[in-house]
Amino acid sequence: MLEKDSPSRKDPAERQAAPNPQASPYRILFICGSLNQTTMMHKVARNFPPEQCFFTPYYATGFLGWLARLGALNFSILGGRHRRACLRYLRQQHLQVDLHGRNGPYDLVVTGSDVIMPSNIRRSRVLLVQEGMLEQENWAFPLVRYFGWPRFLANTAATGQSKAYDLFCVASEGYREHLASRGIDRSKMVVTGIPNFDDAASYLQNDFPRKHYVLALTSSIRETFGHDDRDAYLRKVQELARGRDVIFKLHPNEDPHRAISEIRRYFPHESILLGGDAHAMIANCDLLVAQNSSAIFTAYTLGKEVYSYLDENRTKALLPLQNRGTSHLRIAEVARKLLQTPLPVLRGQKPSRGSAWNPRRSTNPFDSQA
Image (cartoon, rainbow, N blue to C red; front, side):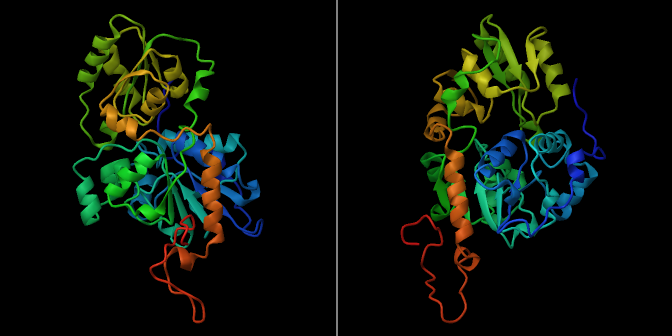
């Protein structure tokens, strides 16, 4: 059964009591979003005492926040089924919820995206964590980078462009070089790997019941106002399948009603899945046919045959570190370093009279000179 979006529908987790600011020496806010982002944040948070950690779905302030409250952004992680899924997960895991960080300021904010940066976290240390594969740059990216247009116009390709964070944990050296070429300060990036993409081999042990099929992963290109020739994609799946079984896994951000109707024109009887672990499905497939999905990383790492919209050599150069699932430990260590570093040092501000200050000194606590 497909779940319908409703701006007025409330999750019980939204009615949790406000956290107690005096409960711990320092407090950390984890800004979640999609289930991928939410589980990433939870993995990092497990390295801290639970009473110090608070969680919120992804949110915006100002005009975008107003639109989200009206339900106009339910197609995005700012609302709709994504917000409900996030809150449901937080409730099931018995995590402390502070909606929109209203009980801040926090000593540290950890977020999986800076495409939107709420105004109420500006007085906190901010740690940005790469959420997965960043989208290809569209027509808006140069306008975002050089003229300050809203980052959401370029989607995740604009990750890092806010510059409103203190450190940025990235998936690999390849991504660090890529982001540096897009104007991101190299000294602010720390290569840690990213949870959910750092132990592809673990997905080989799974309970997904089917094997030896073609897996087709769709995309939410249209929901982010890009051009997607879905008919051409489906014809390509037909061509590559050559009569083999096909399983379709829909992107969580796309309109499922429209996607199912389109698929049925070409595949009247093949399985279409709205949920489930895409990594396990990849581990059991013979061929992945994708558009642009972070799950492509898992397929290449496992040595699967892949057809996608992305350049194979470039994608392989960006593959996340494989560190047996320890990225969350490395990110937590970065977070601890931030908590131990005074904000004036992180922000390059001149301290009070009598203390040493070197304006040319790196503010990255992981730099050897810092």
